[in-house]
Image (cartoon, rainbow, N blue to C red; front, side, top):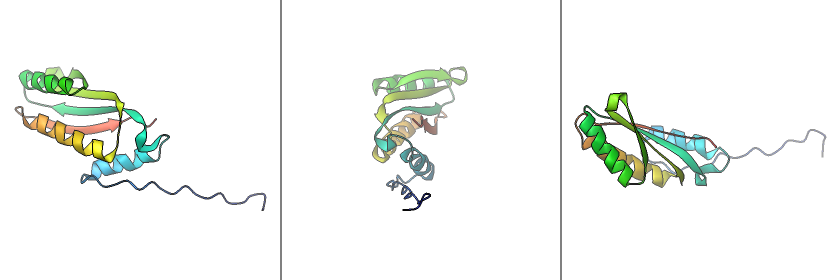
Length: 119
C-alpha cells in the first residue's frame, strides 16, 4: 500500500423520484448530508394568498396538522415549519400535496415550495 493510496469515493445516494424536479433536487442534496434522509430537520414551507382571511384559514389548517405557523406578507401568507420530521421522498410528496391543496382552497392561494436545514 502506497503512502498516498486512493480512498474509495462515496457513492451518491439513490433517492426515489417524487415527480417534482425541484423536490428531487433538494432531496438529493439532503441525502448527501450527515444523517441523510432519515434525520429530522428544520423543514419550512411557504404559502401565499390574496387576503388576510385566506391566510387565517391556511394557518388554522396547518396548525391543526401539527405545523408551527407564522404570518408573512402583511398577513397574506404563512410560513409553516416543523423540526420533528425526516424529509423523505414519501414525506415530501404527502406534504406537497397537503400544502398545494391548502393553497388551492383560498382566494389567490399559492404554494411556493420548501427548504430544509442541511444538518
